Length: 302
Image (cartoon, rainbow, N blue to C red; front, side):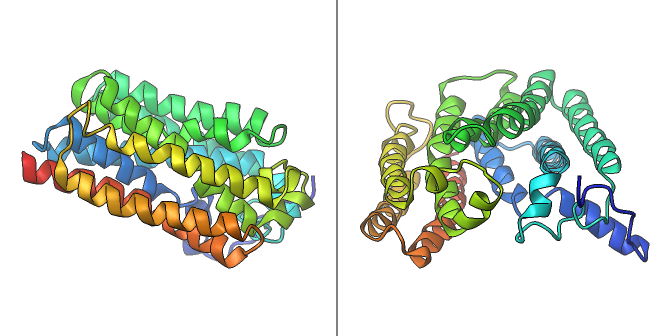
């Protein structure tokens, strides 16, 4: 396979380290950790154990890094074909696939061990389920075969709040599953906005992303519907669950209003990549601030 078994091209240890860090796609991880932290704060009712928080966030980082590295190993063929990803460590020949695979296994093993030893088995197994779902269900079976890949695959990115909640309580209740649902419904608008921007890249390697198969108008229609769907779910944490209060509610109202407005603007202009980029960037800010609002609410009400 071209670009997947080139000889190593490093000059020094710093470049080697940098390449292995790039395998983990570190820009993706902070958002996953923010959702985990929000879940921990709610589960702890504001009375945070800082050591447990640090352990769970570190374990979550290792799990996410493992999943992304597995993804880089499996997708090395299409990464080589796409201009956007051709310079990643494996297709560029800076890391050999079997070395990356070993690295991914080590990261996953460290995550499981850390969570199992210093949190509990429930959180450790949930973290491993996230890796497995992302790698096997999404990357292996869905990504290259169905237009619904990101909808179903979004479950992998929705697992971190379950990990955080289980680490605190030892189990799960309605609240963490609601957090799961919020992220699950948020993922399609977030990812499809990106897919609109890089539609040609996916078409080049025959990945059946929604904009490639169904076109821009259907994609923005689906973005609009999923955006409308996620909004009411964000308020269920206030009523009927009652785990958050008015501070979070006020923040959620503002964030949701902006989210809906941006999705509506894109719906009126399906081919506008500037609007797609604006929605994509805002979707990241939306989830970060929504989770921050959860934490702030817990701090003030604890």
